[in-house]
Image (cartoon, rainbow, N blue to C red; front, side, top):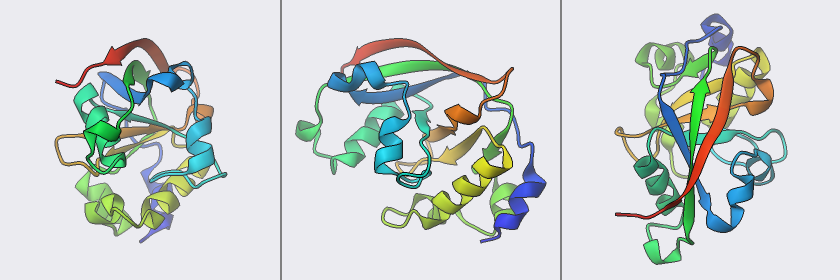
Length: 173
């Protein structure tokens, strides 16, 4: 992996203009727009107790599939869910869905979506955040039809924004 290549990728690109979605347990609806839980737990793009991020998906269906994966595909283990709809305009995104970006970083999609090894995405995210990226456009571990937007909410600079617009109960169809 070539993390030094990240500096040459600044300022990145604009996030695609459309709504993004985040799903949480219904009991946690009041904290859907907070990054604290990811800070305490750590995940694919944020190291535990280092910094938090807001993980967003391109559709409610993709957000649901991500949550279902977290419970090993056992729908009966998934508590009632709510989905938040976000309006985001982000100007400095690292696009890890771009093959030329992956080539310059000397990594593959498989390095980013490995089910048990988050070392590459965490290292990339830590350095991207340090350099001033506002978010990462990332391939989803659930498949090519989905992608994620990993937002460093504490690093957004106007005119960039990521705003929660609506929260609704989610009913899987």
